[in-house]
Amino acid sequence: TLPVYLDCDTGIDDALALAYLMAQPEADVRGIGTVSGNTDSGTAARNTLDLLALLGHDDVPVAVGEHDFLAAPYAGGAPHVHGANGIGGVQLAPADRQVEAESAAEMLVSLARASAGTLRVIAIGPLTNLARALELEPRLPGMVHSVTVMGGAALAPGNVTAVAEANIANDPEAAHAVLTAGWPVNLVPLDVTMAHLLEEPHRQRLAESERPAAQVLASMLGHYFEFYRDIFGRGCSAMHDPLAVAIALGSVVAESAPRVPVVVDTSDGPGRGQTVCDLRGKYRGYEDRRGATCRVVLRVDADFCEHLTLSLTE
Ligand code: BDR
Ligand code: CA
Image (spheres, rainbow, N blue to C red):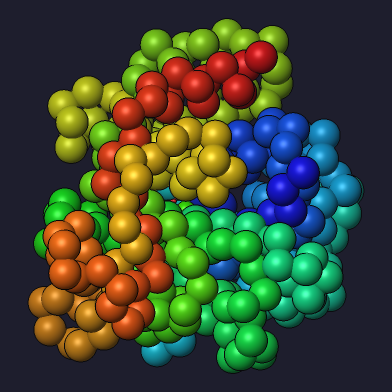
């Protein structure tokens, strides 16, 4: 089995990612930490506990992470995208348990210490908790299997500014620390996630499934589809976070790419939050550069949304 720590800002596509992760028999989810992003970290934790109860996984510990970002306070999330409660206004049955006493950063450090280099860290929200964990345990980069981050835009436009993607834009200082920490990173940017759109027929299959969790996810998606209608001219939605989970587990094959250096613009200019990916690594002579630790996933050829829909309805 593959030990996993998930860090999320639950979130509609985070909810789908969580359901997908829990459905993978090879994943051994040791803990989940929440961070502010789509909603605040406390609400994200509540959403996560309630979703886990719905999915029949009340045994997975959940820790609340950072409420504020390294250099700025949390400023209200993305209610226009994810609804006021983060999950499209859907009311879940409240789980009958509480969050852990430790913080998300503490949970990540203790899971890494206990798993002898095998822990897969999957981050699908702002990277504040991971940055705090690096402060708590500077040897953390040598203690995990890999870090898969949904975030950034390499050649594609951003979704918050012309160049910045939401998870990175929320906390560029944290993102810079995490992407340059030296651990092996799989970066799953908008370049690839915007190419995997869940369409209305997929949503219908979730809605008509006999699985209650699939029905609930279908109603959350109703809200998300309206946001994407403005972008694509039809109701659909990009599967950012589920795709990152699949890549972390090796369930879909990403185009093989060399590891390259990625830094984040933390200036106050128009480039703030940009992931500057040095993709020259694909040319001879640019290999083996210092800081070349990030595999930037630009393409996945599989029909990921079909695979996702099957996983959630079977
Ligand atoms: C990312 O930002 C959040 O809104 C989504 O959950 C996803 O993690 C996409 O830019
Ligand atoms: Ca997210």
